[in-house]
Structures are given as structure tokens and as C-alpha cells.
Image 1 (cartoon, helix red, strand yellow):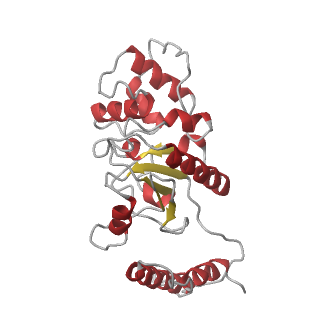
Image 2: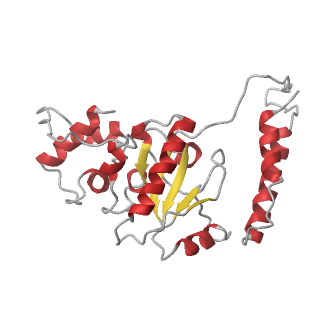
Image 3: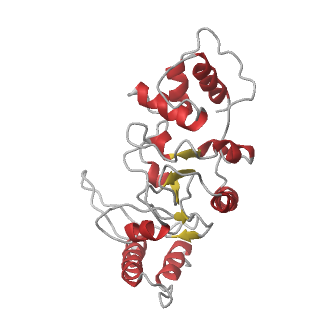
Length: 267
């Protein structure tokens, strides 16, 4: 019987590295894929605690797991070359699926179906393992400079493809700071979230904010949106970094509450 997953991994393993200047990382990538292929091909009986053994009978109904979130980062480094070097070294223990340069160059560093190490210790709603459910996109930006139009154009093109390929909901295109509010501030307040939301890559508050009901609980609203509110101050700041970029602080004023309510209603 044909095994689609087996053949996908096999095809990745035989990818040539002849033109790749990062030969060491390419060799390690292929070695790791070979290990995955071997693990996926195992069909073994496994002993259970109750004295029984599992038995293997192959099903024909399966496919690959697919990502359901896209997490956007800025690199906080000085160049795309520096970021690629970081992601091809073992010691930093960090990676992403895509890196987009200031000039619009798009570098893919990992197959979409594989798990990158980009989110770290992060949560969104009840999802406590974002890396297993997401695609990570790093934008070459040190965190203090505007994002170039070429870079944003390439990001929009990439998001168009990924959203179509994996049917990713608009509200699941979020920031690293959204999923890790106590640790991360990327992408910065200069990132054009409204431009993305206008093209249905993310959501945005209503132009005219409706006044939240008197009994609306802003903390609960943030949790329903997806934020971890154990540190409420950090959650409010992360929310404003995304949605009220001219007032990035932890002040829960009327405008902030009404904006939270607007995003809450779009969930």
C-alpha cells in the first residue's frame, strides 16, 4: 500500500544541496528528516501496562497534520544574513518557517508541515503548544525601523498562499507578542496590522467603536480573544501593541475597553 506521508518525507530527504551555501545545516536537515521518515514508517506492537499488547492494522484514511495559526515576528537582528545564520546553528535552538528580507526576499527554512521553534513558551486560548499548530514568519527588522513596502508586499503574497493552502482563519494570524505578552514585543508598534486586516489577514477594531456594555469584563474579553491574562498588565500592553499602536501601555481606559469589546465581538 502506498504511504503518502512516507513518500513526502522521502522526497524531502533527496533534495539536493549542491547550490546551497549552508551545506552543514542542509546535511543536518536531511539527517533529521531521515530520522522522521524512519519513525513514521514503524509499525510495531507496543506492550501496555495492563499486560496487553497493541497490534498494528494500517488504515488507508490519513493525511498530514496542518498548521492552523500564523505567528508574525520581527528578527531584532541587523540583517537577513544574520538571521539565517542564527537559524542554521544548533546552539540558539530557534527557527522559523520563513524569513522575509527588507528587500522582499523570501527564504523558506522549514517545510510547512514540520514544527519550527519560533514561539517558545507561549499560549493562545487553550492552546499551550503554539509551535505544534503554527507557521512562524520572521521579518528582517531590528524593532526600531519601519517595515519596508517591499517586505510587506512579500508578506501579503506569502499570507495569501498560506491562508489558501491551509484554510487558516483570519483571527489566527497574530503576533509573537500576542502569544507571549510577558516576554516578547514583536513585531513592533510600527507593524501595519490594519493593512493586513483590510486584506483579511487578521482582524481590526471597528472604525467607530461601540461603547462596551457596563457589565463587560475586559479581562474576560481578553481571555476569550486568546490572551493569557495571568499578568493582566502584560496582556493589556500586548493587546495595545497590536490594536492601539499609538498608546502602547497597560492603561485600561474607556478606549481600550471599547477596543477589546470590538475585537471580542469578532471572535
